[in-house]
Image (cartoon, rainbow, N blue to C red):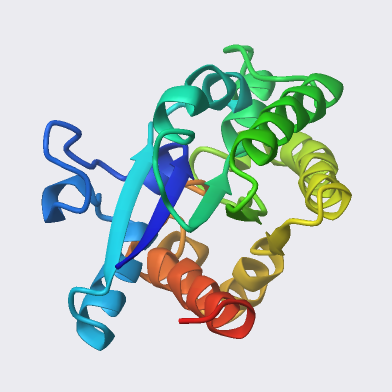
Length: 213
């Protein structure tokens, strides 16, 4: 059985019930992780064990503080990391956040230790993303200035450590030209059903291309 671990913020968590065991339907959330688990269950029954370790509101500092508990002990074959939007959002709204250099430093610190302790682990780093929406539009000029810088850092880290990088912003931009952006990200940050499926589709295509099933 292949174990896949998804580590991140609310976009990964999406209202999962943490009191239930890993791989339990109620601990998979209602976002892209659940969509992926559904697809694996449909196409490969009993062959995948999906672990959701997303926690809403997390910034990179929070992932750094909990990866030793939530990542290192788990014998997963693949680790998926999606983080960054809260680092930007909270910074813009003066609710904390992470300046760019600190974001890179903490992300690298976490990655280096994970790779040192789990040399067999395959890591996918996802690009954080936004669209126009109720949470972003009031600050859209700041998002448009800052988010590309954080996205560039995430890609840089993936390249530096020879990790897998999954771009997502352009996928959302393209789809937002076809449908109302609120159908993708209900507030400009968090995925609706269509947005969750869009992430899952991109993730599955990436997985099928880069990993042995």
